[in-house]
Amino acid sequence: MQQPYDVVVIGGGAVGSAIARELSRYRLRIAVVERAHSAGGQAGGRATGLLHAGVLYRPGTLKAVCAVEGSQEFDAVAAELDVPFRRTGGLIVGFTDGDRKRLEQLLAQGRANGVRGLELIGRRRMDALEPCAGGSFALWCPASGVLDPRAYTAALAENAVRNGVEYFLGCSFTGETRLPGGGHVLHTTWGDLRTRWVVNSAGLNSAAVSGQLGIPGYAIQPVEDEYIALEQPAGRAVRMPVCPVPGPDGPCPPCAAPTADGGLLLGPVSRPAPPPGSAPSAQDILGGLAAGRVSHLLPQLDRAQPLRSFAGVQPHRVDPATGAAGDFVLELRDEAPGVVNLVGIGPPGLTSALPLARRAVSLIQFQEPLSPNPDFDPRRRGARRFSGAGGRTAAPGLKRGGSPA
Ligand SMILES: Cc1cc2nc3c(=O)[nH]c(=O)nc-3n(C[C@H](O)[C@H](O)[C@H](O)COP(=O)(O)OP(=O)(O)OC[C@H]3O[C@@H](n4cnc5c(N)ncnc54)[C@H](O)[C@@H]3O)c2cc1C
View 1: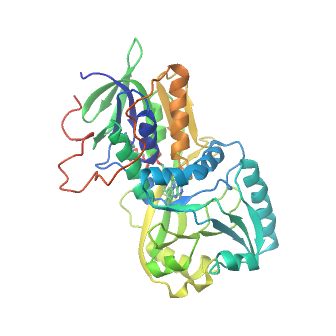
View 2 (view 1 turned 120 degrees about the vertical axis):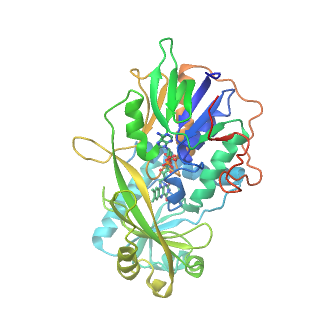
View 3 (view 1 turned 90 degrees about the horizontal axis):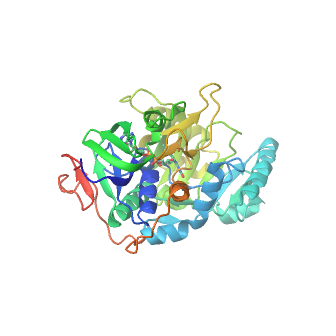
């Protein structure tokens, strides 16, 4: 068997790649095993691309803390990684007295979370900020923004590789054997990998991987979110995300959000994930969203042309007994030494990727000192492709097929 790794991360999505990148600040031998044939992850590539300000999450939750931290630092992160990002701000718009009450609660919650610049505003101010938005009043969140989820996820992975992380693409983790003196043998479709630490960042599969690593009991409810994308003129006309007032715990209601590249997304319409291979119900969205449930948010939208629909599946962690929705899990348990376990990283996981990554690294640092990597370079220079480009030639640090040795 080959020389042991210090850390192997299972899952090369936004969060796994952010963790690998943060680990590469230290003198460690790091690998990422990713069952897909490109780094980029399942969820990140299909996210809406909202930089969440942190208003919607209960104070004290990991979601709230990480969203606020991730949002506040993102101008610097986007510059460092050279990814498209606009600090647009966002509006949660209200129509009724009930909406106003709920917006007041969200204002208090957002302030308790440390979100900066929140204000309840009336129609005149809305006209100045976003004339397209419907509604009589709104919660103005200047900390919100739009980013390119695919570019961001790829940039995290590219920078991790640039700093020495090895990616095994098309490589599935299948099980683990704990070594008597400490450490793990990870069984993969490429063969065995020996490592001192293992990080579970397997997204939709995180509860199953958690069980395979000796931490059973988690449950993930996959929820499919469908969107439609509109032509660019619609996106250019809308300056910022416009969302209706969300319920206390219900699914995110359909919003209208410009994309980093000038398009406009409408959605999501959420439903329990259908069986793999079934087609997204684009007609439901086109009929339901554009004509009905979103048109009150952007009354001028009627003339915009739908271009395509797409769907992504979120890992909602639920209490197996009650079905209640849960916070992100990030933990190190006595019964599974050497395992950093992340479960249920749904939204705002993209916004939270780097804050979660720093906390994951801290869990390792509590157990052993880590020496800085003097060659670590946080900047991403130029584009390096992970997939396509002939498909067979992997960039340095990327491995396809063969054996991990
Ligand atoms: C539709 C949608 C919209 C969203 N919108 C937003 C948004 O606007 N803003 C925001 O902040 N967040 C948003 N999110 C959430 C965010 O995209 C995710 O929380 C984040 O991308 C999760 O990253 P991840 O790395 O944990 O998971 P993933 O990207 O799913 O990566 C997990 C990886 O693990 C791999 N894997 C699984 N099992 C194995 C195994 N056994 N062996 C090897 N590899 C394995 C998978 O192939 C996958 O690539 C959205 C999510 C969805 C689905």
